[in-house]
Image 1 (cartoon, one colour):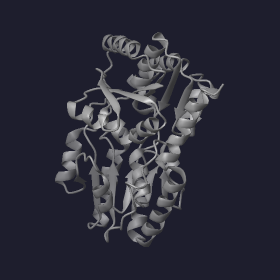
Image 2 (tube, rainbow, N blue to C red):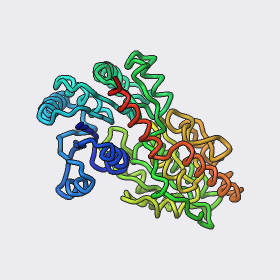
Image 3 (spheres, helix red, strand yellow):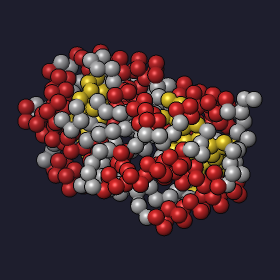
Image 4 (cartoon, rainbow, N blue to C red):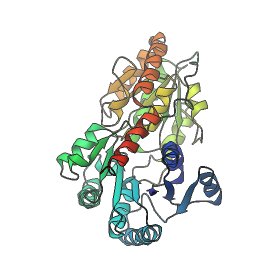
Length: 372
């Protein structure tokens, strides 16, 4: 049996799907991975786990119908040549165009993973509303061809089912992408109260609210530290870089750029913060859970999965700087709560987000399609 996985980047395959690739290998699948901008070093790395990595010209953020039609045709050609038994897609363009191309290529088994609805589905007037009206019928067309559609939170699952984008019987709920609990181990907390936000530098991740809250906290508690880790983005919702630069220049935040290994940065911090507007299931938050950090995040789809309010952190109204300041201040005034909530975070990671448990659900669902 051959399975082809199509994703939006090599880094996402490594960071979020690596254990799944190896699990497929262990089950005897021939695994082929497809992503944009593949280097020879990438191919060698994937060959080390017996996965053949191939490149495709996928632009994750550009909206160009002609380029997308070209992508669809190239995916069709590739899939026809490979003749996989399964095509597994995740992220919006891969799901839509990969699923449609696989249907044209007459692949019998297809599975999609909705890892979050992101920019298009966050309610805003204007361009986003227009994009949503275009994307929804494409999702419906793509998902009707899939045997299985995995969702990382109940809200997204309900939205797609209730909107008629997918049949309920095809859907499977999983706990995010999971986290490797051996790799992300609990580490001692620093003596000071240090906050960290790890995310792509997008407005929708709540970067602006984090900076505003940090400015207000700094006036009252100059010793408080605020770390920001994440790469710049070409997404239409990218955070203006000058806002970050000004916050760094005024010593409001410390910017750590993008790191291949976030564990040293998380070890420096006491509390993980993500004031996002919507998520699938934020992987950085799962890593923070595993390392025993309390979580401050918003009460929105995806984010609410990672917090039991009052036990391992706080859920806040979206875009509320005031609520964010209050939650941060509670940890500064009650530092003893950080260790207690951090322990609860680690327990939650062990109970709900172990990557091997998450992948077992995916493997079992795929295997069940072959029964009979």
